Amino acid sequence: MKKVRRSLEKVRRSLEKVRRSLEKVRRSLEKVRRSLEKVSKSLEKVSKSLEKVSKSLEKSEQVIGKK
Image (tube, rainbow, N blue to C red):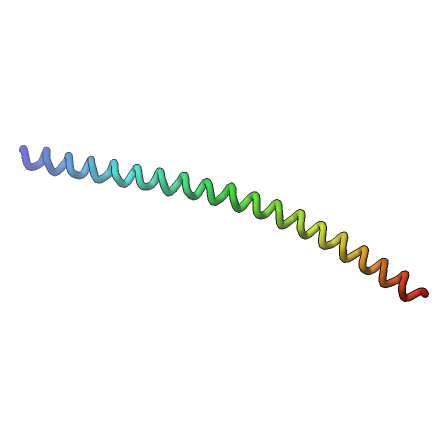
């Protein structure tokens, strides 16, 4: 009976370690997700800015072409 109890205690400790490790991974993944959201928003802003620049260049080229 003592051996069984000791084995169960070992399993319980191991499971607790796994649970803590999984919690750390979950927190890390959440941080990564938030970072990716920020990067995505930044890329959207850059894309919009590039579109504006592209349109401005097209207008400039049209003005130059008319001269």
